[in-house]
Length: 349
Image: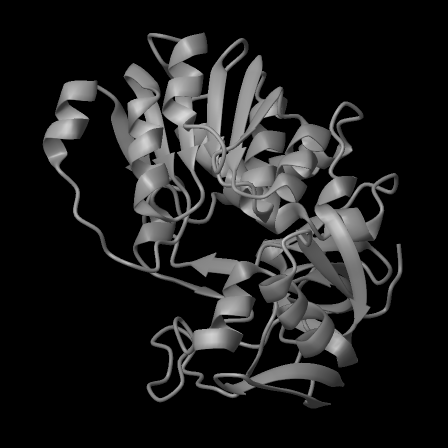
């Protein structure tokens, strides 16, 4: 099969790759669409970060070269002999993360896990073979290109759950890249009444309005803390730090009310100094969110099915697998108008 294989930093090759064996409890999925994640981009530009280049992954025993990609939808092509829940032709999405299952679902992912596209071959390929427990059926009325957004939406939906967002809440989102945009979508689905979005890019802020932000502000022109304090002197109910830099981290704490929630979603590339007294004096609850529970993954399909939710502005471009590097990775690095780029495999909808 044709696949995009990571060999080294800035060395991703489109080549033929063997399809893995379908074991008794496995499902082989013919990939329709696969989204480019920030993780894929980072592994291309500065990796290996999570990829097991020299030491085999402790869970899978595999090392690079590995097929990238983990946000995808497709059609069941083949099932293992003990699989009863699915049949050939079923439309599905796949949760790429597998855990040991030794802890409660809300914390299990923090102990040990592996992921398609990072620790074993992923979805920038014609086929993916995975355990049936990770496969979720897609409703017939949901197009497969939109269904490919389930995984990144799940990351944000889990963070919104951690932030305890409920009907009528006020929410602040710092950073309007793809995960920030999905955080707006998830907050809207959770019932947030006012959603404030902050970024340095007018293009991204326009997308934020399109997907559900009630107020947007370019922080290049005006201070986010002063702007929000003028409207909500006691602070907002929840803030989400999705930019990954110290100024937005500090701002998220400053604009949140006592006992409100600040959730860090961004992967911070650099360390920074932080005075815990700032947190103590604010009275906010600071947490972080990584990945998602499988139940959150399944519920994200419901969000995508919600007729009041429009995620189409997040899908900014569709490309061929052969053009992954130039039109995918390079485009995301150089064009702030891009959000979620989908790679066409079979292209079925």
